[in-house]
Amino acid sequence: ALTRLNFEVLRGTDLDYSGMRDLVRRFSDKLADADVALFFYAGHGVQVSGKNYLAPVDARIATQTDIDFGTIDLDLVVRAMEAKRRTNIVLLDACRDNPLAQNLADRLGTRSTGTTRGLAQTIAGVGTLIAYATQPGNVAQDGDGRNSPFTAALLRAIERPGLPIGEVMIEVRNDVLENTKGRQVPWDHSSLTGQFFFIPPSAGTDTAARSGQDNFEVTFWNSI
Image (cartoon, rainbow, N blue to C red):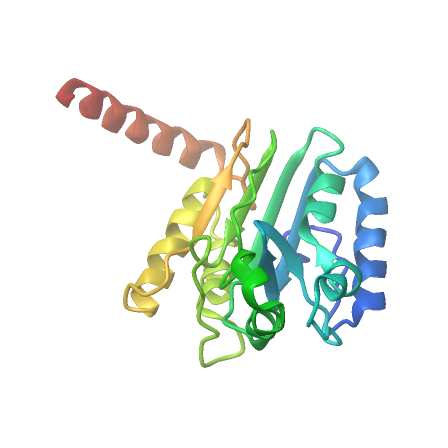
């Protein structure tokens, strides 16, 4: 889908630690001339003491050292993206209930208070939107098909012409709520400074939509 939307895509599937780190490095190198950077991750993630780590397929997590040297710190990815003022989009389908976090909590014992289910909130820097499959600290569903409910909803929304990314996330949220019967609520944190469209609206559609929105906002403000 991103290729159809004219993104230059660096793709990795079922990567081990070395492969994941290499892909993140190549992604970082590509960012120098990019006006829009998008990072999508679907897989296992671990939250420890408020920090998020992405787990490669060969991760064996039993100690803090395993976390430090066997996973990818999400902050490393976000920091590379935010090194330049641009539109940055981070989409994380990594809030699954997985044995890695539980194994780490069991091994750390009383020191495991910072190891919890789901992912921690990451504050988006200026120009960045970070979207999660569900609320911070909660667990998302894997679903029954090829994709999770979150990723499936994204695929249905991002190629709809004329939707700014804020409305894309609303569409995704409502889609996931319906398909999970309210058990999962996608969440995002945005510090975007302008509108971003995966497919911009046509001039006529944009004018009509903006006019309708303006009228709605005036009516809403008058009611307040």
